[in-house]
Length: 471
Image (cartoon, rainbow, N blue to C red; front, side, top):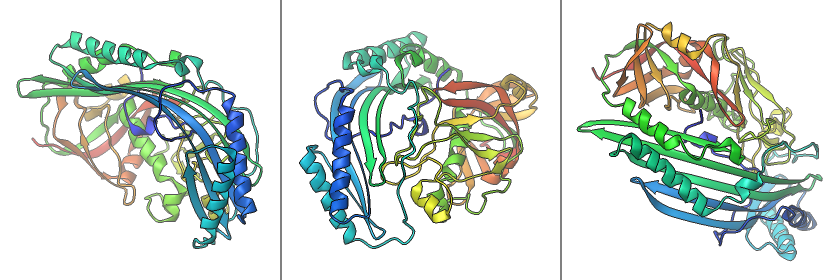
């Protein structure tokens, strides 16, 4: 099985260049040398103009976007663009600048201009340094010639085929969604000697099906994605979302009560990704995360171990280095319920007096990579069979408020569990409580899982949670 169209699984292609959309063309692999030269020229221009530190990323990307609306092709677009982004620092003060003209003289001039902007900015006493060189081999499988050669016509054919499949399930089904392709080539350089190049591809399909039967409505969404063409099924998704939408017809209201909550792979992924997002050190340091002050403490049940692993071949968020050039490593973020570390870039690590974790992005942000969850010893079917009174959710967005940790999330794709069986869909339900209650009440992680490129998505069971119904 494949994934659902959640933003957290959207491919994060490192060292990618963005610019104006232009006519379609395939990138030339040897362009990495040109982009590295431009990035290094921009860094030199900034340093020569007085910057104590500077970094630059140059590159270009090609993309295809085919949109489906009301079961028809709404648009089909393709283009490419290139750009250069620079950060310069003077006495801790920072400035950023992006340009689209990528001649070497333009790069040097842009670097110098960025340094002059930094000299006029307010100093930041918490800035100390940028990444230092730590070379290693690139991760296998992040670039695929077959995806690079994938054209608009092929993307349109894939979209039409999936709509046709959905219509065979039920002629009245309405389908919306998209097919997207990305190919990027880029380079990163900084004043400490970091010098990196990168190539990446990705392909995804995402569809949402809506099925009406009188006043009754059933719907479902799902997606498929990968770095390489043979990791993606170009057909089958339309049929699957239509069949699942039909299963969600006949939803019923339930009474408000404390029940067990079982999150299927997609719902569990969304919930656990929100936990990793809250471990963002920048948010913690600014007091904007419910994880503040929790490092080194138990925050979840012993059954939960979360690992961030950017080193998996073909992983959708894999890469040997992060967006700042820091070498990435496999990181256990939650170990048997204990929060072992926050996710750091160079700035937050310098501020905290610790080592960067390799989660920096271009421009100074922080982002998690591939999610791995330690599996349990029983399959998902057993977790459901053991549940007397509960709700099964998949997909869904059971996510906490990032600052307070409060949870108030609607269940849009849920089933009532009665004596170990899924008996009927539910409507107008709400999960309430706090993130700490949900984490503490996790009592089982399934032994089976759904796998996406680089990601392991098991089912998790959370005991005794308030589910508000409309009955």
